[in-house]
Image (cartoon, rainbow, N blue to C red; front, top):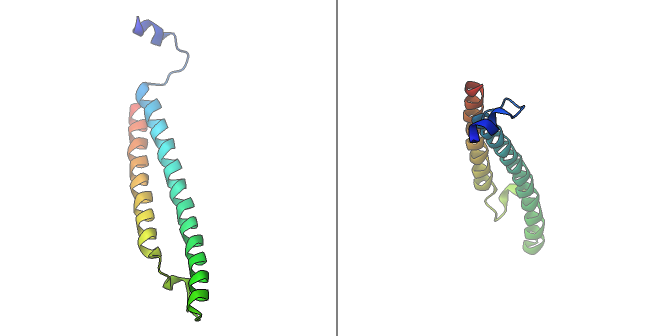
Amino acid sequence: MAGKAGSRCPLKFSLLTTIAALFIAQNLLGIGACYVMRRYLRAINDRIFRVESRLLESEVDSPAKTSMPLESYTSVVYLIAAALSLIVAAWAVTWVVSR
């Protein structure tokens, strides 16, 4: 019975193709979220810089010298984006092979 229902479907997509497309879309959204997080971290670091310079009443050279470890957080965001990119590539290969 399940075979008959599947044979009447006008679309010629396999289940693997559909799953691959969904995971590719999900991971692309995750990469976009990493970009948004990077921009958010930079904005928060600038706000921390302004608050710390007022509290310490000193002229700090740059926003890179704040109490927030921006470099560490940025590295983590880049690693997450790289991992998601590899997953997108793997699913893209799966999608191409399954066609």
